[in-house]
Image 1: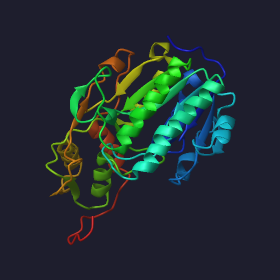
Image 2: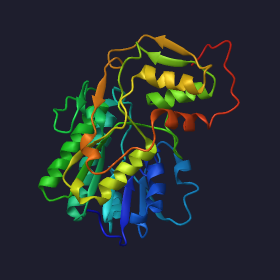
Image 3: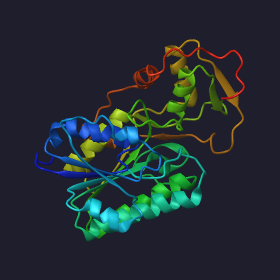
Length: 323
């Protein structure tokens, strides 16, 4: 059920970012993409230059610096592509209300631009990386459930999905993957989401700050498992025209913190007041994805332990006036 191993040109928008920096390395290590050229398209707004450094020498890479709202540059990047993995987005924590206008512009209208260019150029396949946050609070959700997103980020990702689905009705082959919050070590790191943020705090000897009770549920997937899912969705024809949840665990925030305390027994927790958004819980089911043969490789403790291993030598602060 997979594509034959032939020369491919895979365009990865946002390829220098957190997920992209892991994915572009895994693609060239995957025998299914042995002959592929990986073209990275990124505006480098987050200055993740490290995501482009020390790439595997066996890989064939191209880099174009550009924005998904720049149609001419985007079409140039898409020229000759056999697949596009659309990761580029203004990324926020799932329930964030930061920069609503710009979030809408990049995540919704930028995706509309990608879809329109893909249709005009006859792209063979678009893989859109969406977010499990499109469901809103509640769950456990499956792909057929109604989406009621909360906050500009989740709303913009759902609108992006709608653009891709409409593109499909106009003849664009597509797959949509709704990733849970990614966590774990990657060449270009992010520390705004809960698991990575708490790990950072433990790593540098500070208390873990938890908003609210900590009983909020957050769907997660390890960064390398996320890469595995995207490569599976790229190659398995059963995924064409489909939407898949990609979540491997639904821990509470307290469970994440307690797992970190298991690894570093001296780590402490502080609870603080929260706004209405941080207290919302949502849970996601990935049984449909498992039907394609996907099995996760890393659990919560393994992912946190590996990431925490990159911080060494910090001692807890006796006086802590800033977190």
